[in-house]
Every structure is written in C-alpha cells, then in structure tokens.
Length: 72
Image: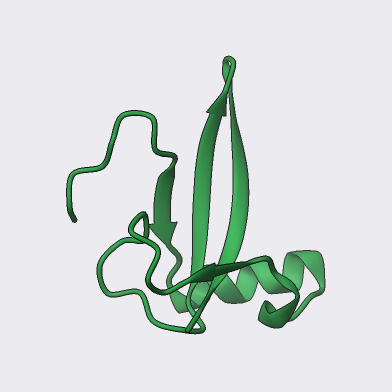
C-alpha cells in the first residue's frame, strides 16, 4: 500500500463477506452506493470496478465512516 498523506482519509477495501453484510444491513444494492473512480489515487492497490471501499474520516474527535463503490 502506498504511503498516504496525513490529511487523507483512510480507504479500506471490503472483502466479499463485508460487502455482502453492508448491503444487507442497509437493504441496498452496490449500484445505490456513492461512486469513486478506479483511477482515484486514494484507493488501495488492487481495487477493481464493483469493489466497495470504506472511508474513515476523522471529524473532530469522532471517526465518520462512508462507503463508496468503485467504478471505471
């Protein structure tokens, strides 16, 4: 994994089981998630279209979690 900038939110690729649990929890399909381009430099190596990425942003003292589906 390339070194990321200190201000860049943490991006984590979900495995298939985690992706399945996330979609069931919110009762959605992956196409309903916000999108992130496969060319985005913040993505971890090995991400392909259809993968889901968890983004952790520190806001004050709390960590907010966001999800994006990778698109071409």
